Amino acid sequence: LLKSVHRLARPSLLVAAGTFAGEAARRGLSQPASVCESAAAPQLTMIYFPVRALAEPARMILEFGGVAYEDASPQHAYGVPWKDAKDKTPFGQLPLLLVDGKELAQAGAIIRYCAALVPALVPAEPLEAARCDMIFEAARELDAVNPIVNVFRGEAFDAKKAAFFDSFPAKLARLARQLRESEGPFSCGAAPRWCDFMLYHNLDNARLLEPAALDAYPEVRTFMAAVEATPRVAEFLQARPKPVDIGTKPMLEPNVPGIRVKK
Image (cartoon, rainbow, N blue to C red; front, side):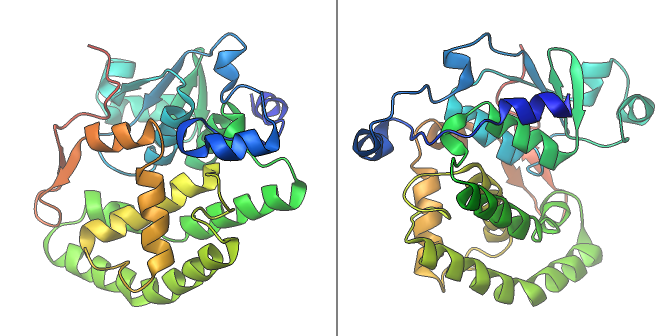
């Protein structure tokens, strides 16, 4: 399957419609925004808990590309509670993406596979592609925010939050510099790339913990607003379940794994 991912990830410099139509016209692009516009779409099921965490960037990528997928809890996917299903998965972890029934594990692999389905998000030029990967890896250094938003409570929450924000300002300053040097509004320039959704997700979770966490950097605020205005992603962000009772009894409202749960 991983070899298939690399075959799918043939880079092409595309820009989505709507906000980015002018850039597309300038470059004279005509390729589809997603492979699903020109080929048989894979059947995708995202298996995850009802949390706002590691599945979010992949969902945003799929939403951006208009790629159909379903959300499912492990209980629904496996027919047994997670503790009984855990050993049936490749590494005993979620998220997990079913691709035509085949399991793809590890959040980074899932995100890169989803990006390969949306060529508009994959840079064509090798250095730009490497820079995109660089931003993705830098954003993942903020992954510790996920359990703080979704899991920890009471004194453990307070301790983990304090530790996270002890190192956050320096990391945010470096990310802000990258955004400034890209001439934005996105991390690689005028058009969004797949790394932007990882960066947005972790910064957004940090903002859930401290609403003013990003205020010191106008380029970061501009980046967040640009992602939030991206076609289809904007609608997804408005519709997705909202984290509530962070630090006391964290959960999503409604308490479902995502907006694409099969009814």
